[in-house]
Amino acid sequence: MKRQPARLKKVILLLPLGLFAGSVHGYCQTQAQTLSENKAIVLRSESELWSKGNLAVADELYAPDFVCHFVVGSEWKGIEGVKNQVASHRTSFPDWQETVDDVIAESDRVVIRFTSTGTQRGEFQGIAPTGRKVRIQEVAIFRLSHGKIVEQWGMPDVHGLLAQLTASGPDKK
Image 1 (cartoon, rainbow, N blue to C red):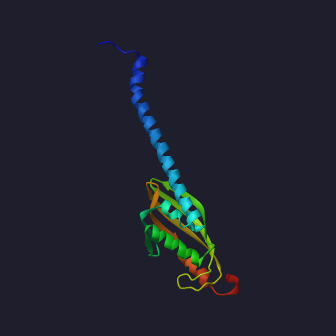
Image 2: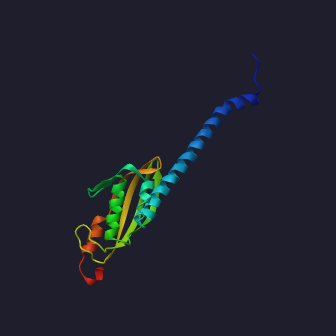
Image 3: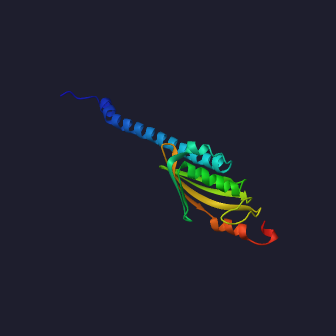
């Protein structure tokens, strides 16, 4: 049997390692791109849908079988559920704004911590319009699949929101 030159042996031994490293690098690039795309989808939902009230964007960002769960027990489903919730909330708070403070993405999940503000101009959970400006902190976890939001877990500071709306005294406005 003929002996191979040492340099050829190194190439033969390192070739599979190089192919593996290339595929890992490609996978990491694809994963980073997906994470970036997922973050952009969630941030677009916050800025265009919730903060501007552009209901048409829900068709682009949410899956037909979307489900939203809230820690306070409410749940809404589907693209029409998203649109109805946004429309209802913006009737109560027409100037509602959501400002994202933190965003974290991993696998198929995006987590945001955000500050929401608005002035109550319509009835909200049985509370007549107060004209009060409110500010609350929220956290939401989104699950995405094939470029669409399919599930959300929402954790708004409902207690803080209701306290601001029901507080008495002229200094509470």
